Length: 108
Image (cartoon, rainbow, N blue to C red; front, side, top):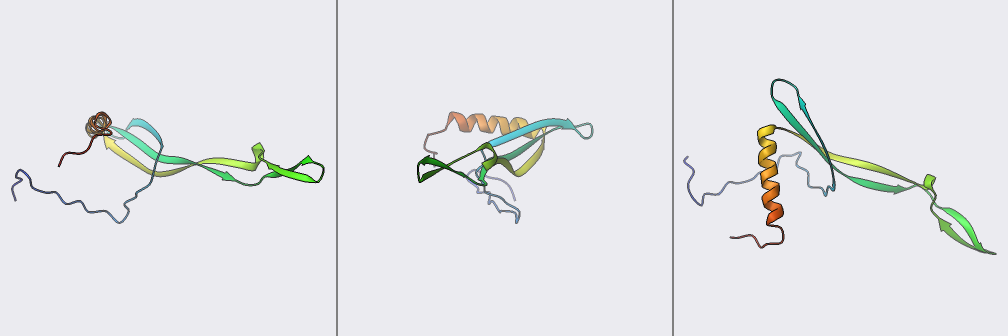
């Protein structure tokens, strides 16, 4: 089948497809063989409150306060994507284009 102008490319979701909000990204480069690669891990931080402590605010009146031991911050990692440098360059270009077009209505 030949590709033609206006032809549609259907997207199918893999059974492992994830759809999560991620606001934390870490990345690093490495070389497993002769080809350099980049790995990006996407996640978000989560604050879990373990407990509060009652403190007497006035005689017979209490309020709760948060202490350093009363909560824990952890990072949930959703996915790590490893790609070639060529794919990383294409991703960079796509992100730059999307950032430039942010807030604009997509053309039909």
